[in-house]
Amino acid sequence: MTGNAEISGKKIENLNVNVLALPSKYILREKDGNFVILKDGSGSKKLAVEFAPIGEKWVSIKNLPEGSKVILPK
Figure (tube, one colour):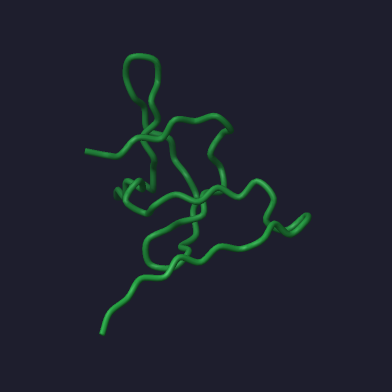
């Protein structure tokens, strides 16, 4: 038997405010660090990020600027 579960939580003041979660497939793992790819005008750029896993398929990003447009790595 198999199944999927989606877990959601409530906002806890001063604890999980402004926490950003992304599917883990958006993380580009390289020898020199972990990155996300941001849409930058007509191109793209890599941004080093810190993250913590949330389950099997999601990560919590700690240092992604507000309003960033994250795209899937190729």
